[in-house]
Every structure is written in C-alpha cells, then in structure tokens.
Length: 528
Image (cartoon, rainbow, N blue to C red; front, side, top):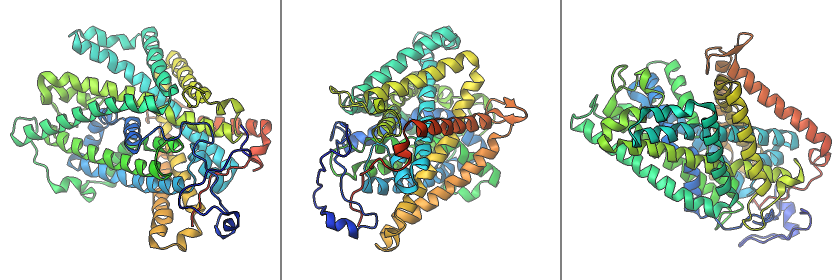
C-alpha cells in the first residue's frame, strides 16, 4: 500500500487548505484518513474502548498479587499508595490524549516519538512497547494456566488438580490452547474483541464489587477478621512511616495500572471524533483507580495488616490474597473469585494482543519493519500478520523459558517494568517537545494539558526508572538469581534493550529510507 496515493479524508470543522499549513507551527495539514492502513474504521465505541482498556489492566488478576505486598509495606495507608500511584498515570494519559488528538495513529508511541524526536528514538520507543506487551502476553497466559487448574480443583474439591500446572508438558499444552484462543479472537478484529470483553469485564467488576461490599459490611458488623473502621487517614500518603516504605509501595502499585494505553492503539478503529480514544484512556484510568480504592478499603477493613492469620502482612497470603480471603468473605460463593481472576487473566491475554499487533502494523506501514507486518485481513480488517507474529513470539518465549528455568522466565517478565517506564516516559516527553511552541501561546489550558502535566508525569517516570534500575541490580531483586553479583532482572533488562538496538541497526541496513526520514508520516491534524 502506497502512502503517497492515499486519499486525504477531510474532518468536519477543519480548514485543510494547503495555504493554511504555513500558519501551523508544525506545518501540518490533516492527512489522517481513519482507515488509511486498511483497518475497520468505527468498529469500537467509547464504551467498548474503555472495556478493552480495563481488560488489559486486568484488575482482578493485578489486585490478587498486589494487595498483600502493598498492605505489608504501607500498613493502613494502603489506599493512599493506590491513590498516589495513579497520579503519574493520569498525567501521562493526558499527554497521550493530546498527542492522539493531534496525531491519531495506531502506532502511538512509535509514531509520536518519531514525529517528535526522529526515527531512531521512535524506533526504540516502539521496541520498548513491543517488549513490554509481548512479555506481558506470555505472563498472562502462564497465570491463566495456574488459575485454570486452581479453579478446577475448587469445582471438583480435588486439590491434586491444582498441581497439574506444575507439570511442564501439561502447562505448555494448556498455555498453547489459551494463547491460540486469544490470538484467534484478536485476529477477528475489534468488533469480536469488545463483545467478548464486555461479558468478561462486567462479570469481573461485579464480583470485585460484591467482594468489597461484603468485606466492608462484615468489618462494620464486627464479623470480619480485623474489623477496622475506614478513616480519611488511610488516604494520607504523608502518614506512611518512612520514605522507604512509601517508595516500596509505589513500586508495587505502579504497574498494576499499566495497560490503559492499549485503547490509543485502536484510535483508527474507534467511532466518533478522533479524540474518542484519548477520552477512553483517561476514562479507563479513572475507572480503575476508583475500583482499586474500593477494593483496597474493603480488604483493609476486613483483614487488617497483621502478619498473622488473614492479615495482609502474612507472607503466606501475599501471593494470591483473593484465594485466601474469598472463602472468609464470601463463604460458599468464594469460588467465584477464582473464576474472576481466571477470567481477568484470559480477558487481558486476549485484549493485550491488540497493542503489539497495531504497533507492528504501524512500523511495517511506515517501513520501519518488513512490509508483511502491514498486512491486513481482507475479511476482518485487522492486522493479520502482526497479530500472529506477536502471539507467536510470546509463545516461543514462554515455552523456551519454561524449559530453561522458571526463575529466568519470571525475572524476564519483571524486567518489563523498565520497558514500561521507558516508553511511557519517552511518550510523555514527546508530548512536551512536540507541543513546545503552541503550549505557551494557546492559553493556560493548553499549557497545562500539553506541557505541564506530561512533563511532570515524565519526570516522575524518569525518577522511577532510575530507582527501578538501581533496585534491579540487587541480586535479591526478583527470583534472587544473579550474574557476577548483579541481579538477573537488571541483566535481562539491559539484554532486552541491547537486542532492540541490534535489531534497529539491522533494520537500518535493510530499510534506510525510514531512518533517513524519507518515509512520509502524514498523521497530523491541525493543532492550532
């Protein structure tokens, strides 16, 4: 498909005359036809976008492993940690929203950073996004396997069934089945995706709301474990006993917000105005933080932070707090929490594949990767080759690592934190740099949304990136494995980045036009 031969679709209310381009700080005219890559335009609603965004975040799965550790380090100020961890995500999401309004493109980070900083930085930004999402894909499928057999053991009252996931061949076989399911649904396009996700997410949110409500009720009626009365002090981050505890808590909750940006990769397939995806991203973040605060308050009131019994500080409870508390809170209906976590992982597995597929599509379309990645399914109008490629890479990674060492597998997945910090941070600064002229000349609101908020979010991410990098060098970080006295998580993070640089240099040799800036990326709306 030739970029130069695509018709330029005009958007309502926009003056797209060529002579007006000279008045635009970026010389931009609207050339962003919604379906220029062949994607299905208008196939996802605002509600559907938020649903898919929530599914990628996977609240039930994320909270199952985060509530215990956060409660252990933050004590009764656990809700404050969830609230503070949300702030940089919101600031960055606003930057994403502004970039999407100016440049609605499925490539998101890759496209925007290329426009702001050039092809080399853009390519590495795209690589970081791909590395993070593909690693998460393998993680989600692996978690779904564990909870699948756990749910079966509860249904049939047979604890031995839960141990089947530890059998390498059974584990991999089940993994392949779940990954194939997710890949198939994603391949069928966003219309099928949002229909499946709506059912999954509604069930998940209903179960979580019931859990939180019953937990609060039992705490208030003194029929819980700790029976703590919620207070406003729980939301005070300055009440945390030390900065070390505060930092540890933030590092634990930061990445349970990850995934909302997937809605931006669907911007060429979203109905309504070109700003819809940006609003969906912010809507996803706000929905998730409200849910997290509700669950954290309910769980804290019921269980408390004791290191004994059902307390959140009990190390025996922290791997999966819902498995421990579902029975005491919900009684005989506790099994629905296991299904909620399983469905959460399955839903996220399927929807997370949306993001790397569309990033690969954009990189292929703009000739930063091979042309096959730009292939579109004629029937489903979805990124066919890119979807299969991303799922296949995640599958090969998981299978290989499973046979090598589960420690290496989970440490590699832990390394995604650096990748997330990298591409979120680079995108935030891309917003600042791209709008550096208009932000100061278009009013206070423009300054705040286009410059101040993303700048502050980027700075927070930079600090977190430095802190996480330093922490990962500790041999005790992650599984406790090391190479020459340096933590394996750090070594793997560096290896992923070096691999990206090597692939980029190779692509520069194969496809010099993109790296020389000779491939047109006409994605801008008028931003005056």
